[in-house]
Length: 67
Image 1 (cartoon, helix red, strand yellow):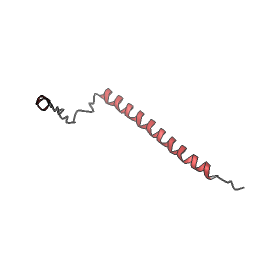
Image 2 (cartoon, one colour):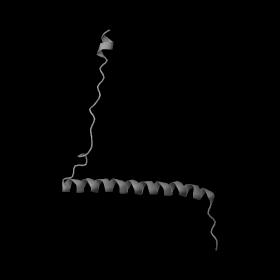
Image 3 (cartoon, helix red, strand yellow):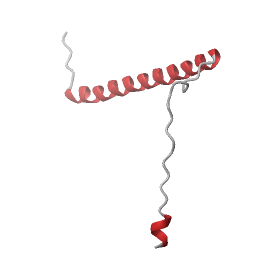
Image 4 (cartoon, one colour):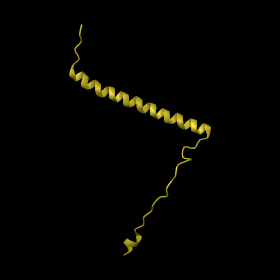
C-alpha cells in the first residue's frame, strides 16, 4: 500500500530536521569544548601559551577638542 506524503508535511519536516541537526551539533560542540578545557586544565596545558597578543591602541582626541 503506497503512502501519500503531503507537500505541506515535507515543508514542515525539512526545517524541523535542520533545527534538530543544528541543536545536536551545538550540543556536541559545547560539550567537546568543555571536555577539552577540563583536560587542558588537568594536564596543566595553557591554551594561550603560544599566542601573540598585541597592545591596545588608544587614540586621544584631546588636542583637537581643546582647539
